[in-house]
Length: 214
Ligand code: ADP
Ligand code: ADP
Image (tube, rainbow, N blue to C red; front, side, top):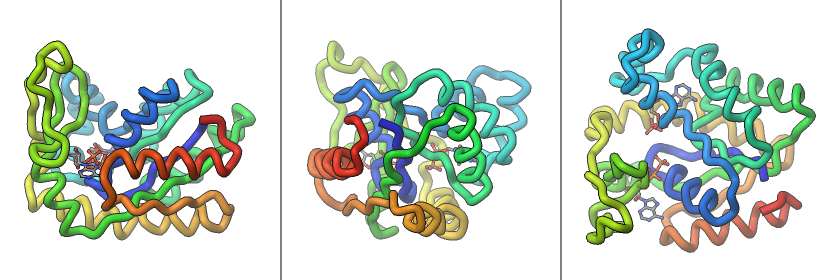
């Protein structure tokens, strides 16, 4: 399976990618996680990209492409979460796929209105130990440390002001990619306001419908 998850911040891309990856073995490639790991490492590259991340701006295309390419080359079954985010990244992805003679099974767009997204992101917590994503109300962290020891932390950029800024960039630069993939006949739109398990089922059903191995 090779799929791209499109959708605004908070639609559930990370949540769904983690679930589908667990269920199918496909590799979850999150460019946001790669960016945060690079910043945490304290490397020179990490320092260069920190300001973009903190402002909620996109890291320059050449940098993000260089960062994610090795992961794409490494596995033949993957779910891309957070890439591509503009036309130039979508073209770069096509070029990388052509180099390895591979195609995309589907571009899955998770759809939800902005006000719901702000509510979801304000309650988002991530486990420092496992990277698993939770929500204080909708998907609470387990009480059992055997299952996930935590701690469960809030992302610095999940403040309302920064969320609204990232959503604006999404609508301006990333949302038009739906046309890019619709023109190719591989766009699947999923109602992301449904409960988590129902969204997962719908994505898997849609990808199976495209002939992708799930
Ligand atoms: P969100 O989607 O909530 O903004 P992510 O975890 O996907 O969060 O990304 C965190 C940050 O990493 C982004 O604000 C941006 O600075 C950077 N980033 C992630 N993916 C990309 C990408 N494809 N292109 C440019 N920058 C990216
Ligand atoms: P994205 O990667 O698209 O930014 P996440 O997967 O991080 O989104 O989800 C954002 C927040 O919303 C998390 O706290 C997550 O637990 C919660 N969430 C995700 N999908 C759903 C859903 N279908 N219903 C309710 N809450 C959800």
